Length: 225
Length: 95
Image (cartoon, rainbow over the protein chains, first blue to last red):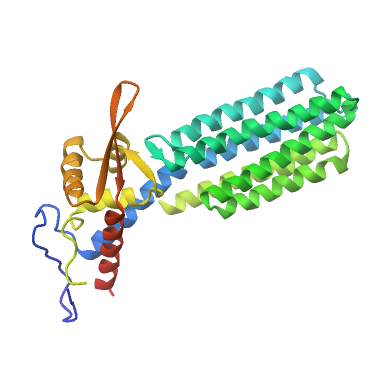
């Protein structure tokens, strides 16, 4: 359909329902863009929440572990047992919430990505079980509590970083590579700070960057609207 | 490029096609979820889906989730390429 005569473009095609065909090409193209951005935003909308929940769990959880290890010498004093329980509850809560959000993303979708999503979800469970088992084995063979308190946060950070790398590959999302790299570095360097400062590294570098990522992602989604 | 594809050149069917085109290859979307995303009535959505299915653009898969039947939808390779040709034609029309 050539339109070089300068007249307003109107498209009329035989066989089109008349109630449906009244829109101009501009409007039709806008309809496509709007519909596709609704789809993408719906898909991505839980992600800032997931990142936020994890960021808070790390920030407060590792913060509490650090505070508990201050042994009364500082302005903040938290008994070790409640701090450890709170840490477990925060991490467990983050796992539950992000699993529920993950299921919500894939509601009504069936096919190849169902498998990919399930494997991704399982990778958290499998990796954390693996690393914990190694830790338990090391403790049984004489790893001191001091060294264990360096080991667990470090492997936790490395595990989370590697799984964000996996997510980046799966959804072709470069932003997850950035976050994954930060978590990997935080985990890897944390033992060099010694206990309990290693927990501060995890809380601020790990938790802090996840919270920043949550805000950046939320703003990005808002700009798409 | 002479004419716009009459199957897709109708706002309801264009929206359905555009929505399904965002799915990854090999994925299907459940009817109720599509209906919710498009904010269309079930009857209206069914009518347009039938036209898309008749044209060979949409594949309809009936599955069972427990005891309740669920209908899943996806664009066929033909539907996806028709959508790409259509949007390219619109862009060309607009210069």
